[in-house]
Image 1 (spheres, rainbow, N blue to C red):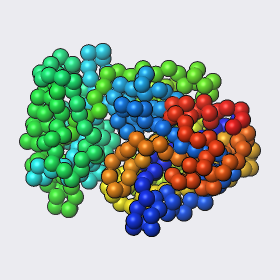
Image 2: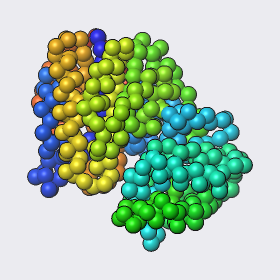
Image 3: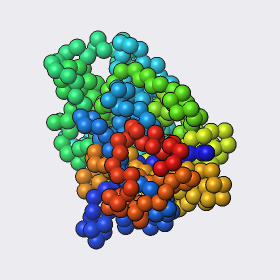
Image 4: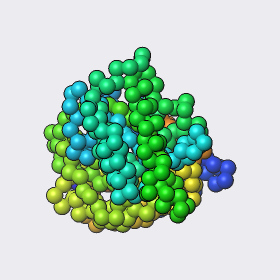
Length: 401
């Protein structure tokens, strides 16, 4: 038996008046996902445990079988693993976004989805001017970068350190969301210094001339200590691969010993090559038992409040990834397929929520239930009811459902 899990990041949503009371999942044309649900079985998953932020790192850690309550240390360490950055025991890793601010407001959490080449130049500048003596900036992909600092530098202030993801308050004044608690003074000083260094940089001058959002500040969040996960292969007795354009997903995979498959054309945005991801998933099964395919585009659309982009992304996942996988599985009779989402990213909120999300499983050994389509509403009829996120793979790998 072979196993594939397809995760449309942030696909779940709320009913929208502009869609006649439907969610984007319900409004999208998804014959292949609906077939998975209709011929298989499903329900809802609680991917985010109580007390945890409804973030992609927490949710995907759970979906890959690792209980966040036991293993989660923060988003920064996951991205550090992906970037092959070693975190010492006396260090913390922070996600470092390049963002756009204006008149005291956070305008864009991604600085116009700045390119990796532009981002590297700016992060290298920050490392040159601010790095050293326990401070290290590491360039990543696009707007997503990493800061590693010695814990001894974070002794100022009282109470536990609290940071906020920038996509949670886009369009709002950023001052109330700056880091606070122990270490906040140090981090906020770095943020202020980044403004001075980035504001007039040539790259940003060109971006403004082109009508693009400048990367004129950094935002620090997602702090955590070094991550250690048990082996996925030993846990499930299966050899696995992961396909994603997002560093944090790659970090979870590498920490658990899964093989990361880099797909040319996979961008983590609307222009990602969906078909290439589908082909790569099938190719990965030649020497692997399990493949986890993650697609970021629906989540990006949710954060930007673009309902039609979200629907287009969902339809592309259905046509170009789920469709070919279903066809292959129908021919071989040896493929079990799951379609799900890690969390909701409602268009109306432009951020994540911890609502239970729909899932459906299809293939040998799975008996059909009353779930007639893949959507939030249809999942209520699923025979598998509501399940705990980190126990999903145990269910999926069972001999019969």
